[in-house]
Image (cartoon, rainbow, N blue to C red; front, side, top):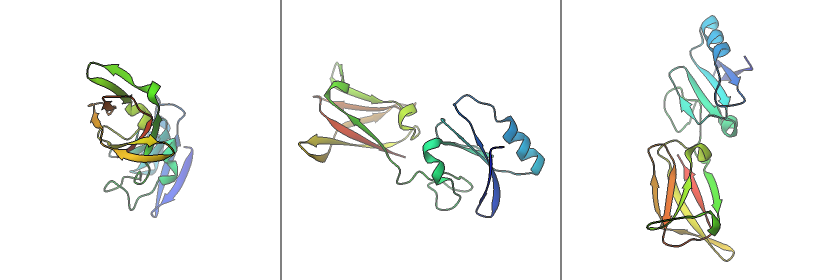
Length: 158
């Protein structure tokens, strides 16, 4: 076990893994030995919750908490107010049959399969929100469609 933290009056084991393909054998043993029903795994994985643990990516580790989360019950991850910002330029667009398309993979934004996205366009030194065609694939990839290429940014939230 890498860490034990007191969160909301409970001992919570925290296992840190370096990749996305890993075993949680030591966390399982620790939870079974001490009768602990909740644990946290910090890794490169996307945020996920099961009945007995939360998988939290490294960039959200400072938000491990129990109360005031964006989720309910014993979920220890708070991602509210932490959008993923993706800057792009004209060269990032891919031409398709209807114009141009920009794909932001879920494995890059880590906001799950139903994120909310807004687009801003750079005009000189200023930024302005624009209406763009935004869709999300079943796998969580965000697709932005436009009839011409432009420099801008996408803000993706849970």
